[in-house]
Image 1 (tube, helix red, strand yellow):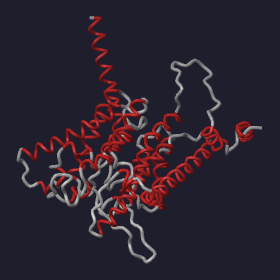
Image 2: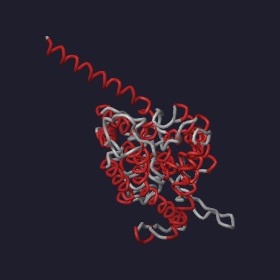
Image 3: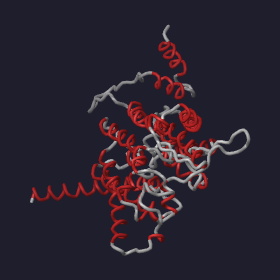
Length: 412
């Protein structure tokens, strides 16, 4: 008897019991569901929720792998910096090598395992208690969480945040497809407000290992974005002593940052893949980028016009060239992987333009005016998650009014 037949027999055995949802989740993960439509359907398609989630995970895997190597690279770069040695990144030289992979994997993979282990455990518990099927919604959330948290965050802290995000951010609303907030961003927001010293400051993002003698093998360092938020006298990006990163290194990802945000080229390729597969909305991605550039242009215009001569009052990020906001921080990552969440985002085409533009616009506004939290894209997305239904409501009402006017004009 084949394994598939054995699993089918076990499925029939557990049918109608409390553990049926948990077993069905494992069976569905390994094989296609046995259910088919019984009535007439309007649209027939081969995709389902599981395939959609798998496509997003495929787009995230390159960012995860790059982030693993980058965590190790930044670890050894920090050691060299403490010795007065400046390490220049070479992709197939001192970046993609076994030493970087080992340190990065030792740091990043536990975050992935805890994220999936704790999150899926909560999903299974709720499925058994409430008697519904385990949904595939957490497959993407479980991958996103390790990519947006500090690499040195304690695992118990991440576990608490994941439980909060799954229960409060999704299950209380009815599960996958019913949540009003992005679960991954809910987890990050909980961490930021509950444990702010672990989510911001000058010790974030650089792995800090302790040797057998009790001394640190690496030092902590600021991100480029953090350096500019705290120091308004920094020169142009790439020439700064504090930033210490060339613009092309920022684009390719050879800099400190969260695991998934550093490599902009991989984020762009992942976004193109999601657009090609029609999983992500190109309207939201494009409008978020336009909104961020617009806010950056406004700040540059204010500084160039001489209306504000002392930019120290508004921190160094006001005078950063507008386009460089896209290569520092998580604006691109948020626009591609977070803002495009089909559940918590806008549903109408016009609403997607408004929704995405405001995310980019507000992200740069928070970045410039809040030195304690220069990375404002996640708060901006959560804010617009709340207003997405309102945006869609007024877009639909506007369409109804225009059609009524046309109808009255034809019948007049």
